[in-house]
Length: 285
Image (cartoon, rainbow, N blue to C red; front, side):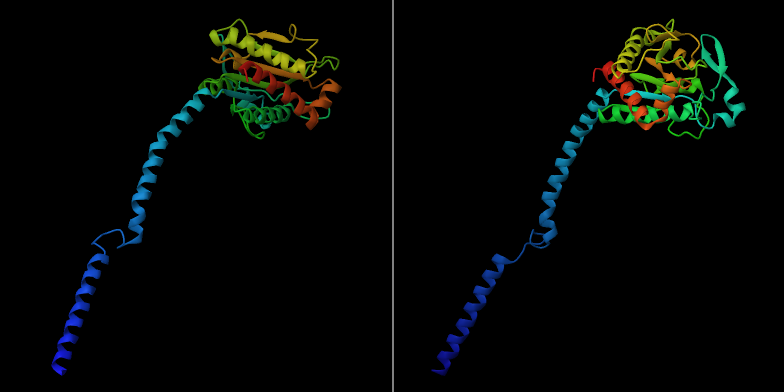
């Protein structure tokens, strides 16, 4: 009986060993198999995601290109600069002005009787116009963004608009007519035109700006231009432009009523809204 028990025990051990080997063979991971490293199990999914992202990238790029191609570009040109007065040699040097002429690089601009400077007004209004255009999906560039520099010169301002291939270039100014009774806005442009852009496109731009100013309640100038429009052949920024360009003289800083409006934040907001409305109308936006 002892011998038989030993045999049975050996058989049981062999059976258990065989079962263990079979189960082990079924459950043991293959070399390099998915259960060997959990991170590897995620690799195919991550690779697929990467491929999806890569596949979508050209589409996103194409959409970006399309949006960029359909986005109008406007260059805003705040006249003068805050450092011009302290650098007379720099701003008085002669630069090309178009039509075979030369003129001073820039000027200091005017001011109200209380000393509020045109250069500060111009930049503040330009920034406000730019914000409104940007909110409507317009790409905006500026000829200057600070008010403590010198220039840029008038021919450089034209170059900036040309290099941006702008749909519209709008210079923002205020006049300094010595007669305090003179009031109202007017728009200057290059005339006679020197290229195609200075012809019909520019006339549409100045007319749209005029309507924007009128609709906002600003009076047309009673001392300069005809019906708010003034064709000029002496403005370098207009003469040298190959893009539709206009110069807005928002009003007379020596006129007490207009000076008060220009000196106030609310007044500058109104000027900016009117100019932005004119530009948007011109662009069909």
